[in-house]
Image 1 (tube, rainbow, N blue to C red):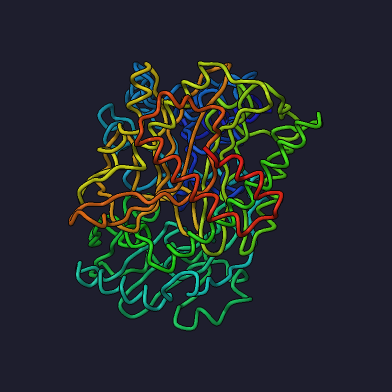
Image 2 (tube, rainbow, N blue to C red; image 1 turned 60 degrees about the horizontal axis):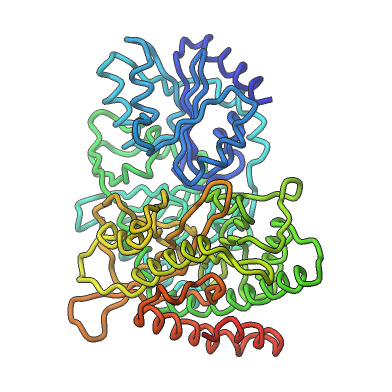
Length: 589
């Protein structure tokens, strides 16, 4: 099927005189996770990871993806003509460098300009133009090629998120945005990122699986706010849009084309697609810069913070119920697979108050599957969970009062883990504790803290390819920018109210994976003026059986004891007597 689809694409490429066609992972809003009707890269390649770029020429089909997906991509590309490029590995060119070298002088490469941000398009144009290579972005075959996907377009209702959960009503947020735009001498702010629109207007939807957002654009001027959306989606909540001009989603590009050249338009070059920018005339006054919503959204207000603190307690109750169930099933010799456990965990979350959906598909990798960083088991291929190896479970929930993301690795059965397993687990745990305990001056970037989590793995000659921490939204996307903790600096300082993950790991191909993740909140240090620290929010014990306590310092042991005591004290009032006993046994050190 994949090779047949490639043949169809190549026929169009030949008809249009295209040397190569590029298919990224994104949609017109440059989302990380896209609606089903925009899963073009997955459709053409069979690879369904969240990150990757496909480049197809007449005689080659190539996929680039990062280290989280190397093993998954190998499996999913098997049997097709696709070649995997391990993006980030030493000596492996990125897709743009590869294309610039492969493409003949003065040829054309094709893209859909809806799928590339303005900054991506500008970078691509600069690099390819050096060889006289032009970019054809006005092709007309995409709708025909991807017609099968168009049938998957979501038609879900929008709903309002109460200020009781959001903390601030949308009118106040809009006033703040207008003041910021005015102070920056911008007449119109164009907003394309779906999570920014959801946050700004206090609306949520279900257009993207696991992400409570709705496909829309917004334009904010001093006079009005225009929301471009499929009108039928707001039938049940029209009242919340009394002071907002609602227009059809498909009218957005007409609106952009009609903007007067004399007006200054603020666009985020990383979230505005290149088609939007191309519609402005040559005399347009465009102001490119990070959307002002990005940082506002990242710094959680007090209501959001208290909400997520309540959500993690309920989430921990669900985890307790699910892991206790798993342990019982294994002890009784009953069959449990990665898939059936993931379903059980989802059911346990669904029982909790204010639950909306999972925040991403549960990653439950047993044994060697745990080494696949973003492993996904389905009912047909899921491995049995049996005694004698480790199970990595990365999961989360979207609740009306907060989003959760937590990873635990546990040893299954009554036998003892190997020394290598214990040493690896302990090194990961020590790094986790080091980052969780960090005290740092205001203005510190996440990149400056990243090595705290890696240091003990480095001492063992180990490392992990993914970042240590990503931002987390509030009843929004589980991956949120701009804050992160990773080796490469992005110029963003950590600020009070930012919510991130703390998730070091180690992955031994063919054996097992270990990742330990909690959510952490950036807070002011109570004793040191001008300094910040992390408050750990997630609540679930680490596996004592996998800890080599002789390798922990007294300070690390104290941190672990205090954390486990807090887990039990916070969660116990919300679970059954049987679950309390189970949890207490795992929290006692």
